[in-house]
Every structure is written in structure tokens, then in C-alpha cells.
Length: 118
Image (cartoon, rainbow, N blue to C red; front, top):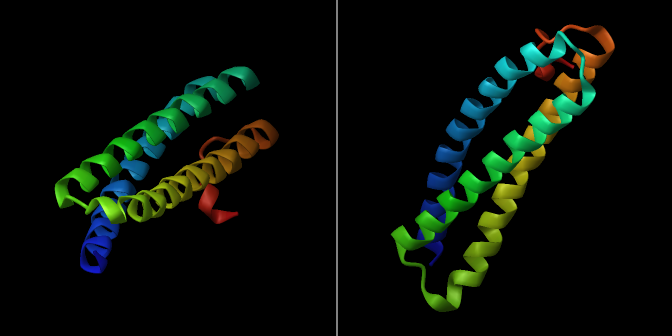
């Protein structure tokens, strides 16, 4: 199990980073249109849409990896817990970055700032 745990985590994180970056870039592009109107509810709805998409795809990725590595039944709960923590990490990171971008947009009107530079 220990070997599979490491393999599953590495593979999950490799795929999750690519998905995260792809969705965040799409989110940045989409927010440019909304920021011209500064419609707060549209920004909230857009963020929720992207967070839900990220969660759904990460959950599907986790299930696929569990199936791929045929995790033993007695270890499946432990592996599910580990992957759930990983999914939550990426969701929190997305919310953090999008929150910084949201703050920047509402308070400066500039959606071109990189939220990592705060």
C-alpha cells in the first residue's frame, strides 16, 4: 500500500496542478469581461462555477486513480482520506488566488494584477 500511496499522490498532484492552472487561466480570462461592469454577484457566481468544476474534476480524478491502482479494500478508506485532503488543498488554493484577484478587481479596478504578487 505504501508504494501505491506514493504513486497515487504523485500522479494525482501532477494532474491536479495542470487542471488547476488550466481552470485558473480560464477564470482570469472570464473575470476580465465581468470586471468592466464590476458586478459583484456575477463575480461570486463565476467563482462558484469554477470551484465546482475544479472539485468535480478532482473528485473524478481521485476515483479514477483508486480504480487504476486497485487499492485494497482495507486501505481504501485511508487512501480516500488522503485524496480528499488533496482535493481540499487545491480548492482552498483556488479560492485564495481567486479571492485576491477579486479583491484587486473590486478595489483597484485592475484585473491584470498577478494575485501571487501580494
